[in-house]
Length: 455
Image 1: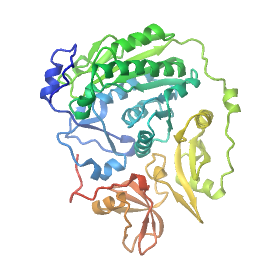
Image 2: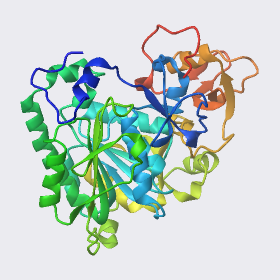
Image 3: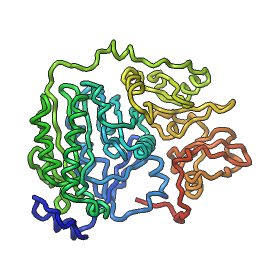
Image 4: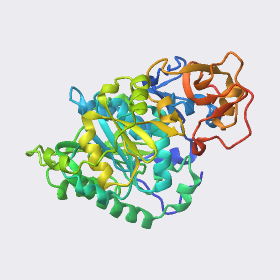
């Protein structure tokens, strides 16, 4: 690979590693959904659920990926699972913001490591990327998440509200050189300077929303000082109450520490380029919006039909922990513990996902369960009749084709499974089964391998 002409680095051996070695490949398993980690694969040192792959399977045609059983993520980025676990050990449920969240790898890694009952608002500036982010989070199945779409300047209004803010900011992309030729083509010293300015703007917006005593996890997929050490130094000098946090990492992991930053360098670690820093806001008296002010901004919830309430009690585990609300034509089960915050988000932000589980839709006389419910960790076991598919049937379902179930299959709404895990819903009429898979999620390619890909 040929690097940009003007590219240089402070790290000895990095250019040689970028030019002469190929990218790594890794996935992180969703053990909360019952995924089993293959014993024959090498583990990512800083992420217990992460493994390295020797070759790249056809992920698109693996039903397990669409079921949310694993997430394809670079090993370096999995460090967020370790960082979050370290800074939240022994804590009560927390409110987290992932400010630049698409495509969702760091969001799901953070979700997995937060204390039980914690909630994440995942925000993304680009609308199309926000939609993809939402799909990936719904596949992961954790209901404690909402998705918004907008500029980080809109998040300043949530003064001192979030216990943790994850800021994987837009950058010049030097860490992507080995796997993305476009990152090489677009790189320039001017891009580095422009990104550094944007990073300072974004972090200034987000610092306003960080609770005193809270943590900001700042990261880029680039190597240079301007977007890393210098931005962190700017934050420490200009952001009130900011101090650097030294997260303990074993020396054998090969992570380089320079200027309050942890650097993941190809050739030194088995992963792509990443830089991470952790800052904390001094624990001055809590200035978050008083509870009574949040209460005043409650939205007027429409009455929920009795059939929807009955469905929630039959379909959702721990149903009494959720408030049932309608957004558009979809009914959501939202965690009561975070009801006030969710009301505030839904009134003041452009929401792609208002939070919780979008579990039901009324169509005519029918109440149809939604794909988010099929993949949710909160789905009650045996809430629906189930039908286990083979590989060709699973792919046909994911392509949103009509299916023909065998004559023993129950009529009505049926939950299809693949290898024992939920895949999605159909409405079985006997002569055919109407496919309820979301149209926007369907596999469009018709080049299907004969056998299921294996990790």
